[in-house]
Length: 336
Image: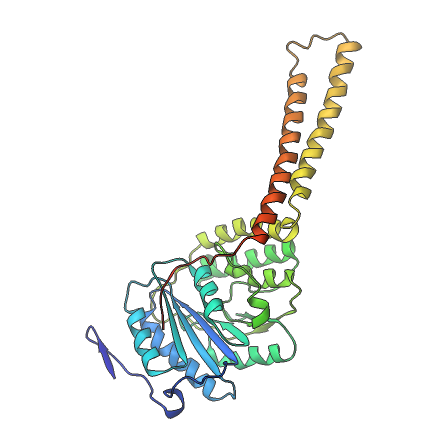
């Protein structure tokens, strides 16, 4: 039993789970981003421990505190001090869920990395099901909240529309990309670089490097404590991110195909327009002084050349990007 600012918390000090961390590499790394989830941390921790007691797997739990301003980090410190299966990464400020998941990947040691939310809506008892699918040979196992307990208008309907659109554009057909409960083979997820708000597209990134993906129904519970960090505005962000994902998936290594293609199309149109201008001058004897088609032709030529040059610059930048040293999208204050 321990006390923080008048609140009393108890942690199960069972023999098996309060001993020192084993020196060998854990089989599972369970990563949980945390942002102002003080009321949910201890129950979620207990659920994970209870679920792991029923399995033969060695494991670690990696909490990533994404700049919480409540008691979340203090609780995590106390849990980590009493259970060496638990690690805590604390950010200096709020960098967002994608950065928190990227940190979880960097600090996880397991052969299989499992992500889940810290708000008690994901069920830790589903973890063995995900691991079983990985052991069957899949590289990515995505949870599907088939019986989702969220608001219909602000969460369910926008999510269904976004998932349908993403599947059509990317070719990765999953019912519930937004479900945080997912399992990844370590060597696959460590090849995926996360930036911006791209965490929901990790299975798509994994598919680009040839990962096999399967989706399994998982449990989903209503939020009991705290406040959801998502709203309807998230759907619009997803749509904007989808444009980036499509570009990165189709043209990330060959940007000149899209920019150069547009440039060539503009030059072809300028050629057609130019022929019409010449015909108007020679055959119809129209004056070119106030002819807007002449200006339009010149504009098309300039734009066509600019797009081709832009494509060449993009090719150079892509090569610099792939050859340069990669830096993580976060700054860590403390690692326990």
